[in-house]
Length: 108
Length: 108
Picture 1: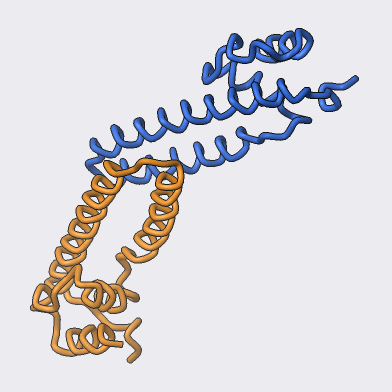
Picture 2 (picture 1 turned 90 degrees about the vertical axis):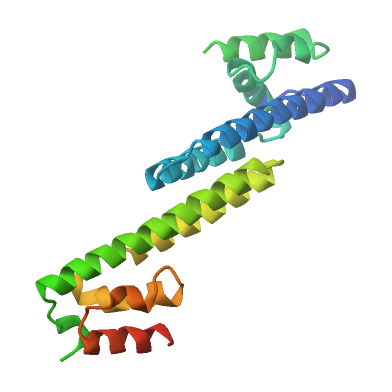
């Protein structure tokens, strides 16, 4: 069975949704804090356009990353674990096979 | 003679350059201040993307507006006067015909 065909139980769906939302909150909170800090130090128009470039890149990144769709969810979680927005332990309750797949994708 | 073929004396070029730089500094200083204030109040990701949209628009606008080329300079000054980044009095020393053209373009 390919990872995109994996079934999710109702309990797993709840765990997944909660972990996904947690990572999203963490990353967006960190991003907002980073923007506030950077903005308070802006002194030139070049700094301003650097902020713009940074936001363009983060928007593209975040829009693409937080895709709550079961066929791709293992990849999403692997990336969130890899980037440390989520700890593997926060996915406890998913079946062993899913956790193993996420763990091995996360180190790729 | 069309406005794009108008000749500029050396004195006029100095006045023009100084006025252009003044308007640029005013607008960029105001923009930086606006971004700092907005950024300090960012609370959500939507606010963040609104800042991004705002910067995209301002960058496009400023990149297009500050074009220091004599064939288009009367139009540039007219816009800067219209948007109040420059006062017509700061262009004193340009010949009467140029000032009249800028003044009438500025109210269009």
